[in-house]
Image 1 (cartoon, helix red, strand yellow):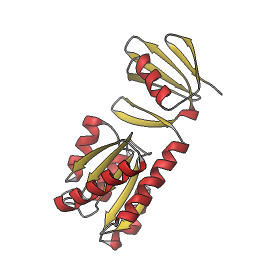
Image 2 (tube, helix red, strand yellow):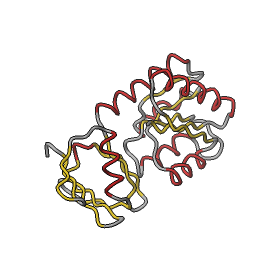
Image 3 (cartoon, rainbow, N blue to C red):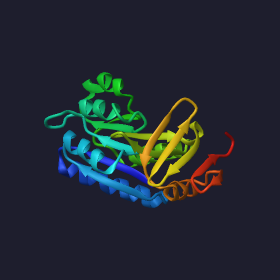
Length: 199
């Protein structure tokens, strides 16, 4: 499933983009969880409450906190989100590069442009399968090929990397369901120990 956030202070623009995204994901056969936000603060709060996004369609000229500052704050805890700036203000393009967006598109975005962007991001995510979790108020979306193994202790699961360990609240059964959905090859050494094959 793709988690997609749409953020623009013009409601008509949000509705238009949501309609495009729903049609495209349905046509491609992708399940999508789409959240609508109308300010930078709304978007940051949505991430805090429901987790990080795979894609964010973000306007730059927002009331209050602008889109670039919003993206900077998102990048403090999430370096993997595919941020797509959609704006009619070309003068911000150089500044926008500093937050490493996936794309920068002029308004109004066409259906064909949106379809290409969604398809490109989806293909990128399929090639590089990831495991998402929250640890110490930071959201991670880590490539599975960087994970060595999982060890759980009741409701706490430890994720072991080559150079570090992260901990999150979650049962091993939830990890198993997640891995099976991604068709990841793994060994279950013990009911509380999962080893990613190929490590």
